[in-house]
Length: 64
Image (cartoon, rainbow, N blue to C red; front, side, top):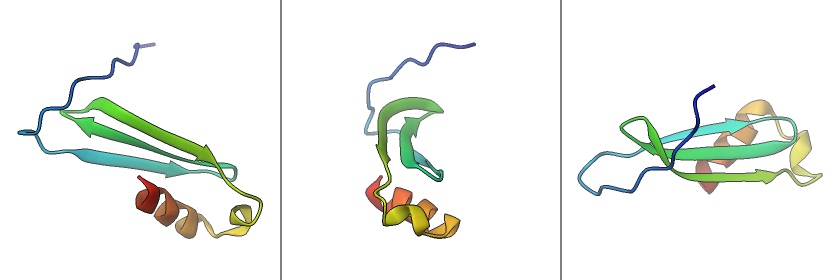
């Protein structure tokens, strides 16, 4: 298993945002050159658990 190392942000390099949503949580990773520079995650509130999968993914993008 490879250890994740958070890299410093370089404003001259484009960013990538990778998101994920499950039945219980949302998550996002901000990357540059495939290396993580920031992370976000949170658990879903009880009302959000009922959302369709596509709505949870959209919420992860909005909150990222």
